[in-house]
Image (tube, rainbow, N blue to C red):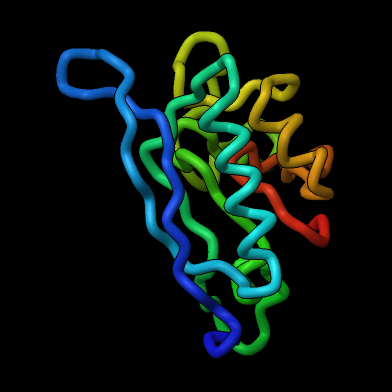
Amino acid sequence: AEANMINITVNVWDFDGTGNKVTKQKTFPVNQYLADTIKQIFKEIYEGKERFPIHSVGCYSWRGDNSSSEHCNGTALDINPNENCMMDGDTVVSGSYWKPYEDPYSIPLDGEVAQIFAKYGFTQGLWGYRNDYMHFSYFGT
C-alpha cells in the first residue's frame, strides 16, 4: 500500500494565536490515484464561503494486514479528529466530542465540507449506531 502513496500539500484555513483565520498548509500522504481529486476537494473547501478551519488532517495510516480500514489504502481522511469524534452509540471511542455550530472545528452534517466531499463521491462515516464525524472515505467504509 505504501508504494501507492504520495504526499500532497493543500491550503487550509485555521486560527492564529489571536483568533483570526489565516492560511496554513497541510502535507499528508494519500493514494496516488485520488491525489488530484483530494487536492480539488481541499481547494474547494479553502475557497468556500465558510472558510472552514482545519488544524488536523490525516489520510494514509497502515493499521495491519487484517485491517479493512480505508486508511490503509490512503482512500479515507480524518479531519479535526478531536472535535469530530467517533461515537459507538452514546460512547465516544475516538476524539473528544462533536459540537457543530458551537465549535468551529466540528463539521456540520449539512455544511460545505460534507457537501464538497459528497460531490466527489466520498461518504462521511455515518453508519447509524456507530458514527465517525471526522471520517470521509471513497469506498464508504
